[in-house]
Length: 225
Image (cartoon, rainbow, N blue to C red; front, side, top):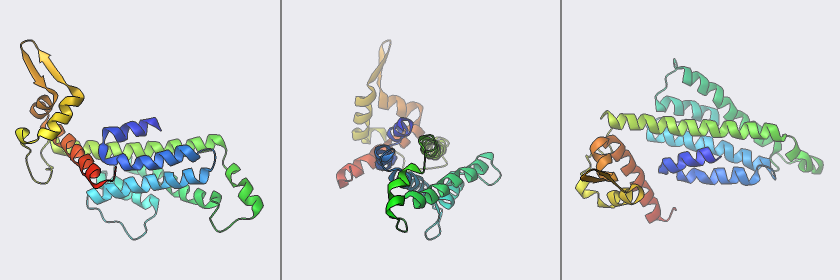
């Protein structure tokens, strides 16, 4: 789960999904139905956020499989792409998570006392690891594919943030944050801060990191974090 946590740290906008990872980890052995429920919710949340960002409409109460397929289309993979074919197969994992949740959940359709007692033993440890690892891999791929394609759009100028061009001298808060994080670089008689280098050499990356910083600041101010 640490690889997905690292991805979340890299792309701050996804920090909220950490709650799903925490719950999956906490209940992996004690109550796997809760881990499965949060695995399913993890994929749904990522897929819905991608669709929302790309203005791709979803039907009312879509299945998790449908959400994943739509998310891949929103990212930019068309039906002819190999990755989209793979995503169709991966979406089956999401669909099966829902089926499995219904099978082992203590509140699904009610269960006899014996069924309630044995429900957590219906899925062996190896299968649990496969299901959760598969879910985490899909989640991480979706986030990275979405963010990296958006980053590419920023770099080639096909995407603007709020239709504005950032002025370096006016972004003191972000520059200070970036410089405190990465410091200053000396080259002979010359010295440049990290924010100056990022702005000057890769403006698209500067905009992307600025957006992530702004989103985090908004969440802190609103009390979400």
